[in-house]
Image (tube, rainbow, N blue to C red):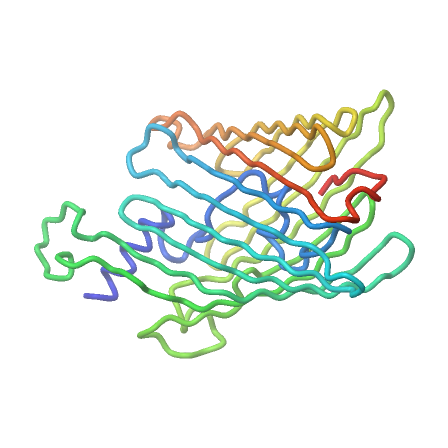
Length: 307
């Protein structure tokens, strides 16, 4: 019964069954590649940071709220990068806090192309205020909150990138271990978590009249669930203003805007308009992001960042 109650709370946390999509959903991952792939760490010649907040399914009681802080950059004089992600996610009576460290090693293939290999390692803490639930089965399990459940986790990825294009493949959570489960390389036997396989890619086309066009795609697969795809398209004006849209299969259409007044600061907003049954109960989802780039090598950069 205790395991059932714990998995029930985790189901509430992720808004679906424990075999479905588990990582918190974000729409502006194209501006924060570290969230998807540890090999992204240090892929620029300077340090970059982002702070984002997502309010999902507005007007829906107990809807998810997600906050993510991320920072990454290169190690001076080395073909290596480091990164850190701090995450807080809440849905209903359940919440998750995670801290994930990232490391990458880059191979320079030619003057522009690089191939990076990355790993991450960290821990997630899960909790649920079960005593706040309205239940008909007055089991004693629901008379006590779940607190401090820690799950160590690790993942890996590979990232190929150049000035105008990129491609990546990653498994953000490859291994994990949860108390009361068996210790195994099979994630489904060692925790309630499931592996998410992510494939990303994009290209920046240089058009006339200070315009650039950036199409990109994200494919997501989890065992026993349908393949999900995000098809993104953004127009960049004078390397300062981004206007974009994204189509997420089976879920929503996303509208994005980003403004980058200089080399140091970026601010972005995304609005998700659901076309699933959820649209009858919510006013969509809002997501804000602030980016700050820093480091002595930033002033030497002649071309802006597109991913």
